[in-house]
Image (cartoon, rainbow, N blue to C red):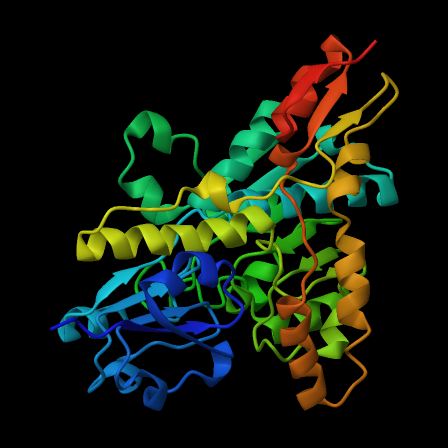
Length: 386
């Protein structure tokens, strides 16, 4: 007797589902916020993003055997419940880490031009040195920019020589000119990150600090941040994530220099890599060979080469690939609407996000002496054409 086809229930905004998962069985897509237990009663696989809470109430009594989240973070997944129910699980650690790193680098280069400061004269504090934070640190250090690193749970298990390069949150906030947050969201334990930055810690920010959150919204107490922003106009705030998203507080957004709708990791490469990693994990879970490679999924970029003269600055190729102010304008256009419409618009901005390629998709042709710094930023480089 031929076995019944697999039933796969997936968030409709996960890319490449038709290519990777439809051949495995019956694919049913739903809005991520609308996925419910009734959808899963006879399902085998559930694929989600960060907007779908996955817990015992959703899964108990269903036939789901495997849950995958196409995200780095897992704070929306009850991992204990999955283990107790005997359900396989995979996330996609690092899938969009380079995209988030390049969001931060793009923001900093745009702000450096707008505010006329020398990025090489600033120190960047990175809170959370996992997949994203470590890659951001590596690129900044390759560029010759001073970094301060804070990640207590990671620091405690490191060899002493490596741990010596880390500092406390208090030291970082007291010394950094730029603070970039990349922690997971945890609500308990000695290293809980929920409201890691609140009234007391926010007050430690130095004059003229740039504060970037492209990690998890509730890591910053948004109400305390608004109170601080109303008192201190020297701060430059960049928020890609919001404590109550998809709701965005218009009063806070008005005090934020760059406000975007949780799209820092939304490069084409990052989104496709997340789905592909879940496909790999499913194949490993059920012991079947992987039939698709990541290279097969990734289309050629519209522009693959760019010729730069010796006068070109770092912002020139970055701006061609990504301008964060475009996303800022799109989000702000939705903030005057009633809250339910604004929340729906937030989700639509993410669902209909235009194609954005990572730096690795664009080879820069430029003079030999300029190649190292552009390569350190993340671009492939080659000699200029004669």
